[in-house]
Amino acid sequence: MRTHDLIERAGNIFQLNPQPDNFPDSSCILVIFGGTGDLTHRKLMPALYNLLCENQLPQNLAMVALGRRDITSDEYCYGVYESIIKFARFDMDETSWRKLRNKIYYKKLNITDSSDYETLKTFLDKLDQEHGTGGNRIYYLAVAPEFFDVITQKLYDNGMAENRGAWQRVVIEKPFGRDLPSAQKLNRVITGVFSERNTYRIDHYLGKEMLQNIMVIRFANMLFEPIWNNQFIDNIQITSCETIGVSSRGNYYDQAGALRDMVQNHMLQLLTLTAIEPPASLDTESIRDEKVKVLRSLEHYSPGDVFKNVVRGQYGPGYINNEPVPGYRQEENVSPTSGTETFVAFKACIHNFRWANVPFYIRTGKRVPVKSTEIIIQFKPLPQVLYARLFGQLNPNLLVIKIQPQEGVFFQFNAKKPGTENIIVPVQMDFCQNCRLDNNSPEAYERLLFDVIRGDSTLFARWDEVEYSWKFIDNIASAWKEHQPEFPNYAAGSTGPAAAQTLLERDGRHWLHTGEVIT
Image (cartoon, rainbow, N blue to C red; front, side):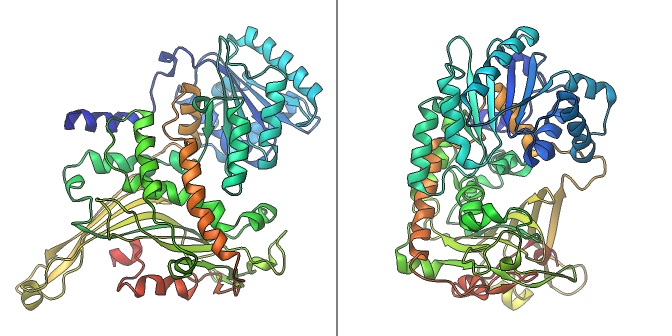
């Protein structure tokens, strides 16, 4: 493929199509299991409203929310209305709301009761006639992971996922399994009913605007792609940290921890998108193929090397914004003797020609001073032979891709300080796409729902991605089982355990962040 063709497609593939009805099979019924849950009210329904406001939903669309509560559709929609006012990025417009309201239905359903599925099937068949959806379905499983296989089997048993003359797709939230064996078991159940093509394993990080922009920044700029390798890059640091604790997620989080909750999916997705080779084309499978190649190239540490290259931590009591906060073991629904990690930092090595000897330092944690998700590419320093004598120490060039809360790109390079003295100082070019007051970037779930409706699975994890990521994670988790951690080992409001700093210091490096770079 010619270079300008690759650039053009890189620019187009991550843009919302302004005319979704050009896709002839986009008409469907969106069935949300867990329709009364937090995810539906905070993310899914506001996302659908935002898509409607931008004319991004197909005309023939209905939405059925399923839950355990015995309420009417009118009562349910009143709650949706309140959620949209609170969480949607567009102000409430009554005309737009009426259009959406006429597409929303609520049904009470017991997930384990086969007779409820029989009733649901009859109801969906009726909606097909009313909305012209032709039997197409999206089943969104916004429920606890232990119900994924139950729902899938019930849909199959009641003839609701036959994929004959119409399509049926399933959307599954993380976590997809707890380890490789459980993920394999779940995958056998799901792909026994829905094909891989119709299985959408969602990672909301892939819907974030700047994450989609990584490939465009890299492949659409001659400035970066020729030097995106071990000849010019010293190290890459990937950080995703937050100031909050586990809130009401204690029951889930105490079973998962940061390794499974963040590293297995979000952090490894950031890694693969940063490190992939240029794909043969920008179709869905070519991009996914390159991501899998990165995961296959990751070094799997021996048990001894795990403790040398992977750091885990758990926060104790401390202060966030000068306010006292409890330690993890004092959080709701968390064991007072919990050994679950809330912080992970590790050094990853990719064994291929492009990245040999370039360390990837990755960290994620809760209750740190600043919420930030960013990728920092630190280029190799220039030889100091001439410059150190004449101009002083040179700073390395840095490229920062800011994913959240700010979205943008930051580039640091060297220039002469104005004046008569020969002094070189670092200067910055900083682009922030969501800093302007009139900016209204789409939310992650908007893009992901839009793609599911269109049948575009580029931004969703393929099974072999999940499989290789679990192999990497299980290798670490297995080593951890043999040693009881000394928790808590960092205070809330600090930057994490001291061992995370040592992880880089022994290589003659330190953790970077945008605020530090700017100053």
